[in-house]
Length: 237
Image 1: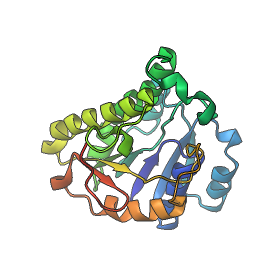
Image 2: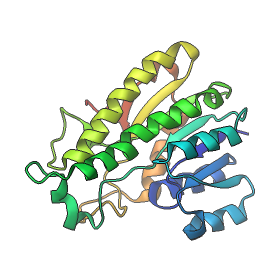
Image 3: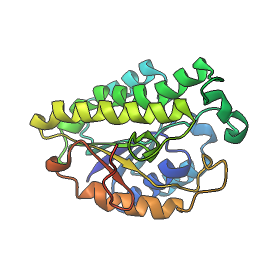
Image 4: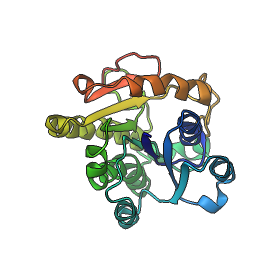
């Protein structure tokens, strides 16, 4: 049985990843900040004994290390860094706090810690779990807004966090290639999650995850370091 660890599993994309991978017969380690408040996730776990719900705030690096100790020696085929933030909610009322001239640097640090630092910490802590598995994949959910060549938005904190994420993951990909570990990044599309503050999203959550799963399954070492959209398009970043 293959195993996947998913961060940010209590809602949106993360919850749907849990649902679809569990339906395919995978063992799922579903991590979220507040399991007690994750009603849908807990319902899924009650229906499927292969879903394990774990409390994890990815901004708490000591907690990541503790979870790593709990799962020491357990092979993890796919480490899925899904947890991410755009900034304070509601987005429409707070996005100017990320604009040049109005930047609030504590906001920027929070976004960087969640979107850039935490995925790297997860990869460090669970590296040997991934190395011990059959599939050996570290997958991170990024965004086209992190592409320097394709998109420019005024939200400096969110955009820069994703650009930095893409860069560090390509470096890690090069370092881990000789061990046969595949590192890849995906943009899920403009998905109808709570981050869609202005109502522009066109992609349904189940549609996005259904498109990403076969691409993750088909990943080979030759594709390590790649950045791909849910439509299969290579994103130039």
